[in-house]
Amino acid sequence: MNPPLPPNKYHPLAWLAGEPVIGEGTWIGAFTLIDALGGLTIGRGCNVSSGAQVLSHSTARRCVTERGWDQLDRSPTEIGDFVFIGANAVVLMGCRVGHHSIIGAGAVLTEGMEVPPYSLVVGVPARVVRSIESEVATWRAEGAGLAAKAATLANQAPGAAR
Image (cartoon, rainbow, N blue to C red; front, side, top):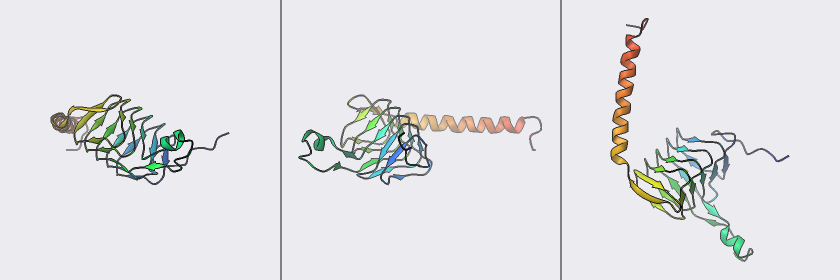
């Protein structure tokens, strides 16, 4: 029987390698690989969906050179605050993803890709398709309106403290 994954505070079926810096309120789903062997920062309030991989090292050169290149390639990866990473997306080493961005399910961000804040990123290889800044502002306003409506309804409920 294989030994269990090393324990972590995010999900028992997530594998965290190295010492990632992960911001408050970040959620990491099952079957994810969070690789900090080359340096990794994930901001606060992020969601890393099931099956996603966030990498900071590669063994490709070592493998194809039959270990003639006898080291790991490493490059720090940075994920900004409030970034959503969709199911089975792959963020390769050296990427920098700006805050409030959405990485679509199955996208593959190639090594060293720079993603501006408020970007929608999709595809293989991944590309930025547009800014979502105005939509985020709309969603934020709509969310505040729904919260206010829920509070009003709660106060009108029979037996509510008055």
